[in-house]
Length: 145
Image: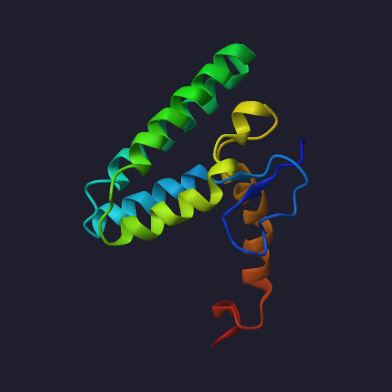
């Protein structure tokens, strides 16, 4: 199993990888949807689509040549440039600021095939341990009568 280098953009997670730390695009898709639900119809919808398309490329990356992945990276960057030129509303402003801050961590999976665009696999791997902790906790509802 390869060592995943993902982050949910928490300060405690960022910066620990020496090279190629990928932010979780699934979390960014969720954040974009939140901004849409809060009323940003300028920036967030395009950003959500961009990250969904990037995840689609990630699912196919094993069958793509390095030059093809590099071309996808350039196209994604151009789309992102166009989106960042827009002025978002409400929650979209915070999301835009986060994207600017973590931009260099968006397409790492296109340069390193061992890294996935999301940390969903890592979270699935942790789920059994979290469930066991929940069940064995003295504060679990199992122990309350």
